Length: 138
Image 1: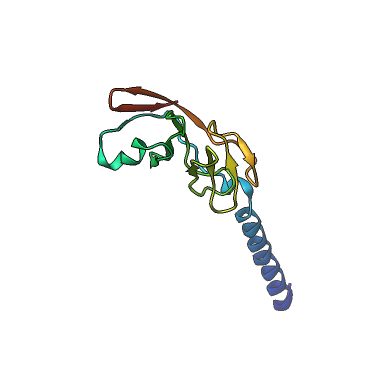
Image 2: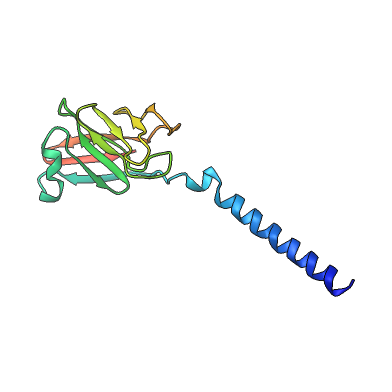
């Protein structure tokens, strides 16, 4: 093997590695946000940090979850990360739904996809109120 042939093969090998690395970086599974598992925590509704939950339509982010108070006064909790690209979803009082500001995906109060580009539902979590404590759990 002469020098020209050797350099050609090395260059082809390096280009192949770069191409494969680029393809793996574009994978949809790499963009999938993590969904909190084994969730069990308490939110103190009397704390000033959680004061948005005192009003219908208010919401907070905690432990990778968005906790909201619906227009009917119920508390709900779903995963914070949009299943499309992981942006934080927001609770919209006017539509009684969750909305991703990055690409416009909307989700019901149970986390089901209403409108894409997201195709997977947000994880929904159980909630229970006891006095001024709101328990969020799987």
